[in-house]
Length: 166
Image 1 (cartoon, rainbow, N blue to C red):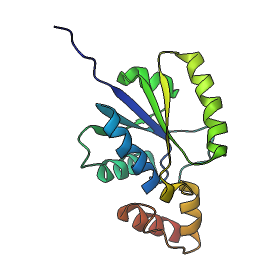
Image 2 (cartoon, rainbow, N blue to C red):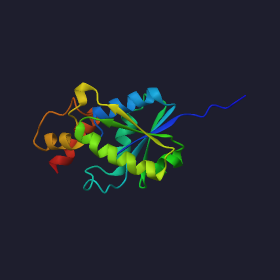
Image 3 (cartoon, one colour):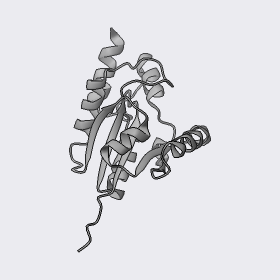
Image 4 (cartoon, rainbow, N blue to C red):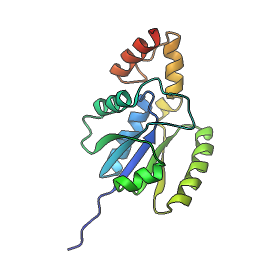
């Protein structure tokens, strides 16, 4: 009898903070793969320092995805391809919102394939209601008192407003 290998994907990002758009991609990926590891970047060359620490960001994701049995969140501080190999993933799943996302992700895909051609990049188009949504946009809205409760989980909206009042 042949053993079927479990399909594992990683969904990398800074998740500072996790948005409903991220959660939409995570939920959709969870239907496509046996296991989805939400890879939370512990440091990033692309972005400035995170508003929320790594433990907060991982915790927000764990609580927001608690009903998804095949999803877990883990911090990582290596190349995403190295992290994918470490957890046994054969796919890196990302959401795409706009052409600007595509340009950046195309470049990252080419660089990742040079590192390990066995790991595929898989892109899920943003659902229409989240095609405009970004963590930085949410933080900017929250900074100026904008309405964010329909853009992020309730706990995140509350904590974001607390953090920005300081």
